[in-house]
Length: 167
Image: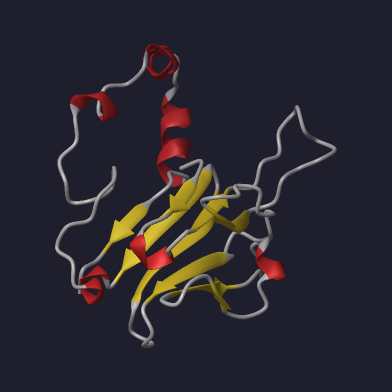
């Protein structure tokens, strides 16, 4: 995934976005770190902050906090860094974990049943979706046609993942 943005009634007028690290041939001198930002729906200019800028839990709203589930370690070079967005006041509250993967962001949704909801909206939610999300674009079809077996194996190992649990 290239972006995770969370909004809704639990956050009031706040939103939280996550972006993956970006470094490529066009921005070698100025890479963008894996980061999160908390901002208002009325002012979208909140600063991007890397994980080290979140020393502990920070209140986003009366029900939501943001912090780190795992911080950088020397072996991974930052690949293990994980933000956690907790929804609720007790330690076993629902949580959204967002981490940097090889080719984008990974998102894990834990203990969604704690929210008291059986319906979760959005592309990854419980509602149905139209075929437009399932149909690849022309560009994607062209890229798929040019992939080699080795490329497919590498993509499989480095694929972004999304996990959701209700218990």
